[in-house]
Image 1 (cartoon, rainbow, N blue to C red):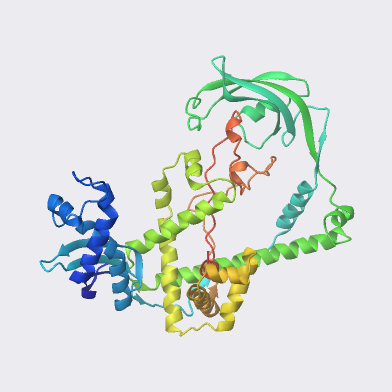
Image 2 (image 1 turned 60 degrees about the horizontal axis):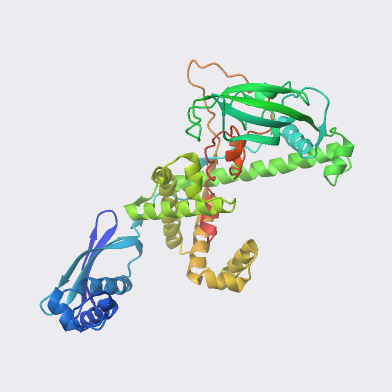
Length: 489
C-alpha cells in the first residue's frame, strides 16, 4: 500500500489516498467472490458452486469490486494513520473508490483529526472562589433531617393534616366510567407530597379514619396519559387510617442515639464541622472548574465537529448507564418524559463542547510542561481504580491499557498545575434588576421533599396511581475537571 495526496483541510480534517496494488486488490476481489458466491444463483450450477469467471461474465468484471473495496478500506485506513502518524477523531469517510486499467485500487479518505492547539494563558488564571460559610440555619436544617430520619410513624385518632400519611382506598372515574390505573386499596399517601394531581391531597386533608368522600379534580393538560389529559374526574375515597410522623426531641439523649457524642452541643459541633468541610469542597470544586473553563476559553483550536459529536455520544452512554443503575434505560426514560431522543441529545452540545475544550487544553498543557508519568504512578492508578471498582488490579490492567492510564494521569497532573497557579478572587455579588423589590424569604415547607426535587428515578409502578406528576430529569452535575480526566470509565 502507498499513501499519497495527504492534504489538511478546514475544521481539522485531513484527506488522503491509499493505493492498493493489483495483487492486493485481486486478493480482496477473490475474497469477496468466495464470501458472496453462495448468494448468487447461476443456472446450471448448484448454489455457491458457480465459478468466478462465470459470475463475472453474467454481471460484469466489477461485480465484486465494491465488496472488495469495503474489505480493504479498514486495513488501508489503519495503514495510512500509522504511516502519517495521524491522531484521528470519530469515524472516517470513504469519499471515492477508483480502479485503474491495471487493476490497482485507490481509496480516498476524509477523516477528522486532533486539532492543532495554541495555548493562551493557563497559569495565573483568575476565578472567583466562594467563602465556605455555614449558617446556624443550615446546622438546624441538618439536625431537623436527622430527627426526620429517626422519626416513627404512629396511628392517630384525629383528622388528617399536612405531613400526615393517610391510608386510603380510592377509585376514579371520568363521566361516571372508571378508568384503568385509577383504583387502589391501602395506599399510603403523604399529604403535601404532591404525588397526586393538584387538588387531590388538599381534599384528603381533614378526613378521619372510616370517613368516605368524593374528590373532584381535573387532570393537567400535559398529563402523560393522553386519554385523561384535561378531563374532570371524581375519585371516591375512603380513609382507612391516619398516621403521624413523630420526631424525637432534640436533646442529649437524641445525640447519644444518633452519634458517638454524649451531648447535643458536641453533636451540633460535629454537624457544623462536616457542613463546613462539604462547603469548602464545593467551593474549591467550583473554583477549579471555573479555572479550567477560563483556561479552555483561552486556547485557539479549529475543533472538528466529529470531536463534539463523539463527546455527545459518550455523554448519552454515561446517562444511560446511570439510569440502568436505577433499573431504567435512556429509551424508556425519554418515552416517560415524552421527549425526542435527538432533542435530548442536542441539549448536551454546550457541555460536550466544554469537555472537548478541556481535553484539548489539558493535553496541550501536559505536552508544553513535559509532564511525565512514572511506572510507580501507573501502578498506583491501577490500584486506585481496582479499589474503586472492587476489582483485582490485574483485571483493571486487562480492561485498561497502560497508555490510557498514562493519559489520564497526565491530564490530571496538568489540571492540578492550573489549579495550583490559579488566582482566587472575591465572588461578584449578584445584583437584583433595577426597580425589583427584595423578595420575601420563601415559606418554610410543611411537606416532605417533593418527588420532582428528589435525586431518584421514577418508580416503575407509578403509572398505576391516579395522578402522578411528570418530572423532568435532573441532569447529572458536571464533574470537576480533575474528576473527569482522572476516571477511566
